[in-house]
Length: 169
Image (cartoon, rainbow, N blue to C red; front, side, top):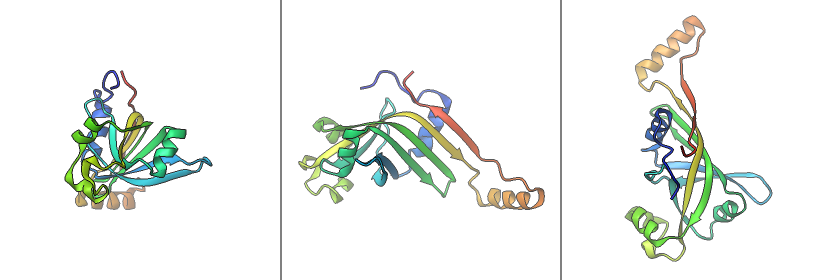
């Protein structure tokens, strides 16, 4: 467990609130040639320390990529709310049965037919270091107003963009 929580300051709280209900994150790693690869990963809730967790098959290419270079990026998108988040951090493969049991949900049987005792199951823990978010007004009326205002004034609607240091404090 990492010391201290990197979720306690205002920017981090907002970032974690924005990704809480996003079900799929795109995880980017570097392959053996240094090329970036992204794949969708089913999002689990962040733990009390702010670490992000994902179920994975032990023999998936992503586990080898993390073994070579543990720097990853997670991208979250919620177009219906106009919320977008990018989180970078260090990943590790976790095979701890207690963690698997604690984070398990029956819907994961789609990928792990053997259930939480499936021998191929592992977890990826991402310890966030930096994040950015873009938060735009999300109602149709605000978008319509923004479109009209931009057409009349030539100014784009305001989007809140913030970089957040997620390193442990």
